[in-house]
Length: 130
Image (spheres, rainbow, N blue to C red):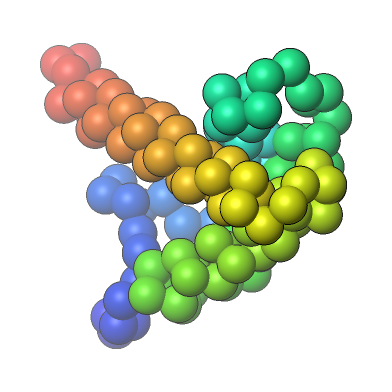
C-alpha cells in the first residue's frame, strides 16, 4: 500500500474508492445532504428567509466536485471547492459579489463546525466499549 501525498482521509478508513460504485453513490448522496443543509443554514443566517431548494440545487454540484477530486487532497480540493461554491452561490441566489462572498464565508464556517462535530462524534463513538 503506497501513501499518496496530501490525501485527505478520515481516520477509520472512510474512502469510497475501495467500495466501488455503490460507495461512490452513497458518498455523493451523503455529501449532497451535508452541503445542502450547511449551505441553507448559512444562507438563512445571512439572507433571512430563503427557499431550501436553492441550497439543494448547489449541494449536488459541490458533492460531485468533492467526490471527483477526493484523491487530490485538501491543498487542491479546498481552493477549488471555495471557487465552485462562491460561483454557484452567486448564480443560484442571484446576489452581488460582496453578499455572495459573505454567504460563502458563512457557509464554510458552518460546514467546518458541523464537519468537525460529526468527525469528533464518529471518533468518540469508535472508542466506546462493545
